Length: 163
Image (cartoon, rainbow, N blue to C red; front, side, top):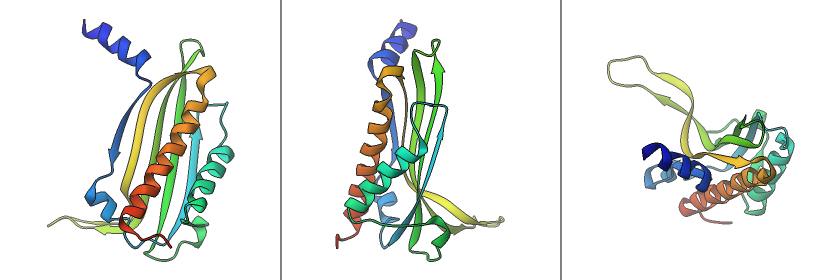
């Protein structure tokens, strides 16, 4: 019975969403002024990094979010938005299993009590999903990326005023 339920959910429910989007993670977005965009795509030939980057940057700019080159990031008020899409062909290429992750990474320091700490970029806000989609429905993945960018924009403006 459990196996049958798993197979049913795998084919009927296209994805499962996981997130770090709550009052604590949203608070980390407060005061950020500029965002560099990083896009990584692997395993899905029907999509391109340039397509995902263009759609992401257009949505952010249209919403009034400042985009800068990652090499120009110099302030603690700068952060990265990382879009990662990974896919694997399944069932002889008829389907893709996929993972989508959108996260905000900020420069930070962390030092636990009585131990060595680190300085570097840390994830402060994210949405991610895994699922399976038919090869003909590959636009579902690009659409999900756009929805998650919209969700980031909502989270960002929930703690920052629109200009």
